[in-house]
Image (cartoon, rainbow, N blue to C red; front, side, top):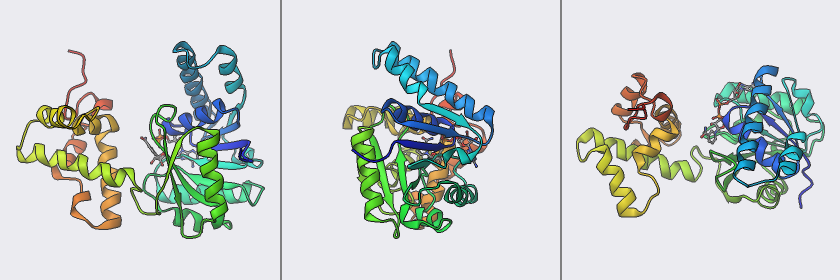
Length: 288
Ligand SMILES: NC(=O)c1ccc[n+]([C@@H]2O[C@H](COP(=O)([O-])OP(=O)(O)OC[C@H]3O[C@@H](n4cnc5c(N)ncnc54)[C@H](O)[C@@H]3O)[C@@H](O)[C@H]2O)c1
């Protein structure tokens, strides 16, 4: 077992809520922070709803749900995290905002051995570590959405992360949270997005070039490769703006054309066709 008992989560959006839920269900004390008390409380309400749905599915008892919820406290003041053993930052994907947050976390988290982790998808861990006085204790911990469902966590040590920090967070993710981990170097995209995003972008290029319809491209991969979902429905699910943003970050880092978002994707984003969340992407999600 790891020595991590109190986890701080910064950012109460979809990822922060999911991370809070899995930590609370593992019996940890979780402090969830956001920029305002209202946002933090909205995050807690989201966690409570998700726990209730899990209870209705029979995944946990009402006592376990109550116990998990009782372990979560929320607020806007980061000094609440002073006693944390591990902080997982899941705030907005904005470099300067995250750097400022890491500088502040380094000030408020009292134990110098406490780990400061980021759920970033594309910002270099080295840059966040450099904002702190404890680069050896800074690491990437990249969860997948929805966190309670997806088993994978990517662990991203920077060039200055200590082996001890890496081993502590791997043990935390596997033993405490029951997740699978893979270790990836501190390069934009890590393992999964580096493989997935070029594939999604290639499917968009196929639509643009008229090789096949969106329906037939997806059927090719579901019926021909046994993928549970085709690339264009998956891109719609992730959000076409998010796919484009990750492609931009990968292209910025590697300068390889396969990562560059194609013009059709950019035009769809500019037109508000963002996929499932906007009701229309490569497919329609509006009620007929
Ligand atoms: N959405 C995904 O599928 C996914 C998957 C893996 C990783 N990520 C990463 O997780 C992080 C969060 O993504 P999300 O989808 O949950 O975003 P989101 O927009 O749902 O939530 C972000 C939250 O961060 C809060 N926030 C912004 N600045 C803050 C600050 N300074 N201090 C505290 N809270 C702050 C916002 O108020 C908001 O509640 C990003 O780094 C993203 O790249 C997202």
